[in-house]
Image 1: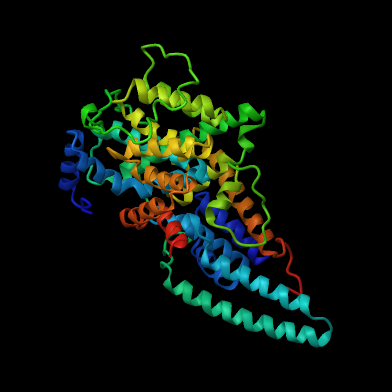
Image 2: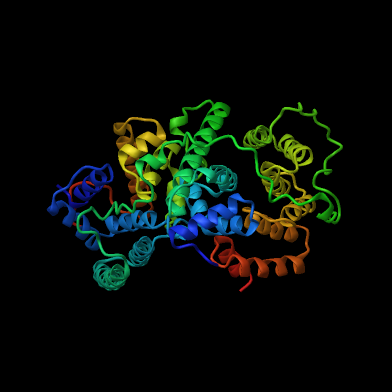
Length: 300
Length: 193
């Protein structure tokens, strides 16, 4: 049976929790080091397995995959540029050189990776992060009154410059909610409208939530969602800045998103000096974030 | 940033957060933020819905904080993040299917994304090519390290269905990779390879 077929079959079996013999586990560890295709695949699974500790692994190309693609690309270029027996010898020579280089690089990369586990197939290195009991929906999650400890006292919140995110689009009136409409229900409604592409209506519901239930956590969250909607779908970067500012005046779990959204909105408004200053502050505050990496590339 | 290491530190942090201390809440968010986003991104398969899912996760986390019992926030947060993100993915799938009149089991997160590029892509893009159900199974297995039985419980299907989804997901990723690399498909060895 073809070795790659065996590798695919065994690695799938391991992923599905089937037991393997020691010989099979050894094959799973060793075959990818000598096979470009399976090595590239193994590097992708490895990135996935490390993504919990290092989420950047999700947004990068696995190194071995990149090397394999580069090797393939190099081979294709050589073979297209020449013809005839002498070119075939040249092609083979060049391919051999590339293979040797890639193998050396892969060997070095392999040494720096984590050691293969002895008792488990390498394709599924189970790093347990929760017990089975823990993943059952918790019956103990009670419906608690929402804490509004992140809410500012109204008298301390300065008036937003240039307008109020709550009063934007006020000329497009919507129906007033029933008094018993909960913050959670409004937030869910807004999200549903947004998912359906009904952005204007979604914006109105977010604004209603912020206006009528300002002390709830959902209203705080809605400010960021509203800002994102105004920036990306409604074409109102000015309103987006006001929404993000309203959130950032107090701050909270979504300060990172709100700060990044504010930078993008400032750029759209052409307020480039402010955007640059905000970018520098963002990178200082969230140096390991994916957005910081993007901002550093844009402003080295 | 101070990250609580011992059980007592974690208990104190949680108590202060429950008492409404904003610094304590901020510390919890900072400790969990990157991980929670990574979980949401991997399960949802695209950056588009990560913000919404992350919001939902943190809402759920702080609502569940009174019931936290343990010495380490991470496993507790992981289970809430996974449950919430899986629910988010399911709701998105149902909404999209309702609008598009297609089988929700077959939906990908981005149906327009091309499968063949000829250049290697980031891991998240291979995940994004997968139908929702397969991607969730793959992520729960490879990223979160859950067993087949735990995945079955989380996704409310049988263990055999989970195994099928895992194998199908891996096969789909494998084929896409090989196509993009221009490698020959599986089969008997050929002399010129």
